[in-house]
View 1 (cartoon, rainbow, N blue to C red):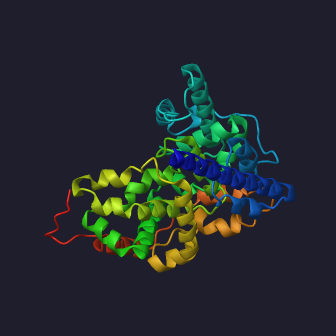
View 2: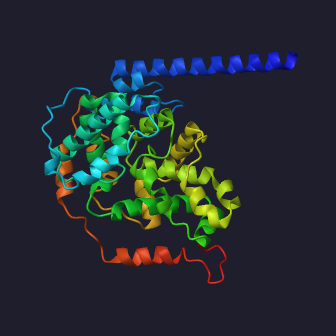
Length: 364
């Protein structure tokens, strides 16, 4: 009986400590907003819990995405002007599967209608952006937190300045980002890298993670929103650091997994993973391997107009009431991605280094 009471007391104490920490976090968020301190607000996303509540996110996210001062225009988009309206409709029909929880079919249908209108408006306003499967997952999260009216300009800026590489005709920039993830894992853990290489596990297992900002991989909305806190307050390469973090934190699972099941094991992220632990490690990885240094060290260069390489010029200097240069972003989209002669050679070398010996028994 004494042990049970002690356990309950410890639980109350831990809950109280957590509550105090959350109260302090909310106070810091409020102070950063009062002071119009954008850097402080961005930094707070790395603390446990991030922005904690959707009611807080409704205030903070538009500030971080520079849409809080009002840049919304009346909807004028039409799906008849879009390149792939059928695929968009199919994805909308499959949307909002895990969340929100316990909503009626009518309310879900209404949210899907709003999601469709949101996507159509953004693509209509930015015809150079190419829709991809998974973009609707990112849009869903913003819709649920901000509502349709505020989500449209917010997601528009995300598309133009964060995930632009995924909305091009070419898949090459995303492929390179995933290979950069592989490089991070290699620098951190040679044993794990050798094991994955022997088993023919290429970095494309993380493709849906990166393209959807993990919103298709976690069933709990609070975990997805927590990651979005981080992504919109960080550089566009942060999803790659998070993907690297998850891979490294799960090394034991991968090394012990049955070889025939490894691809399935590595693709599916356990739902009970600690998001704050993932974020803590991702932030450490970003500090150890900044985007430019990572490209230099790996020899995997993203194109000059990738949002990752234009970040310090186009987005990071923005102040509290600044408006990002959408015209410049559209100009980037109008340019074909240059390909250097040595890139194919580098890719072949990278692939060759990941070929297992002929007698390897970890093949499927």
